Length: 343
Image 1 (cartoon, rainbow, N blue to C red):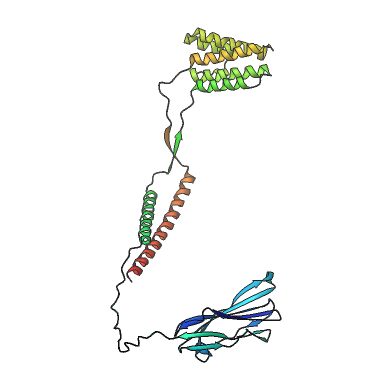
Image 2 (cartoon, rainbow, N blue to C red):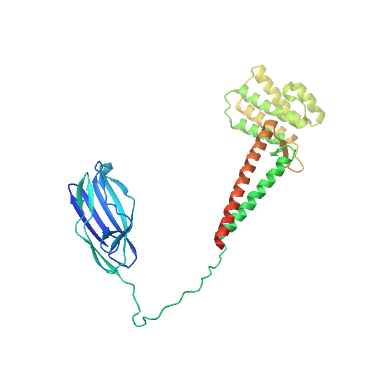
């Protein structure tokens, strides 16, 4: 590689080749760079194709000018690459390149030397000529890309067919829902009593209201009558039919104490409150209904609304059209790849 540089008044001109030696007919690159102020005009020399740079050296092509900004846009570096060749073996000296900057000519420093070598010849057998080679058959190799694209086309085509069949079916679009079984009444009641136990017991009235509301909700779910809207005596009358007097006695004590607190402004001690909590828990435990086997979640299919039916059918129409177009495009591209493999 040969290069030369000249610096003048902040203008830098460089010229170099990518190699100093090459064979006859080979092409090399001659790169010329000029660095100047950003506002200055730079003109590189231009050569016609096959115009001689020096006798014996031809210019094949003048590349486009590449621009690079330097120093935050204050300086500019312009680069042009010339493709040159030679068909005579010899040593050549390329004179300094002329670059005009604002009309003033700047030269790269010194000459650039290149050597053009001849192709080696077998002088011992000058009359020996090798005949033409036989036609070389290109081996065919099946590309995995073709296989993958073909599989993708098959999947996409399957999706298009399935959506077309579904659109042709007048059945309503449904949504699959998992319906969880209801929580047993005693489980809910025990959880609520545990929360009441852990909550602060500053307000006696609120404490007993929360406790009796939990018991009334449990009785309503467990025995099937509207205990929330009944008085204490009405609840007890309905429960006496169960003939579980020991359990009812526990409940009766809690309900009567709660009525006294709510309506007669009766006050209770902490031990009485704790005893009421234990009695409520005992009543739930004594009357709970244990299922023979835990209920399992069930699956339900719910039809969508008319508005959603129209929306999802339009979505499937657009998606099927898009997939069909994409499938055709992929198939065409795959056929092109197969054609190129045989060509």
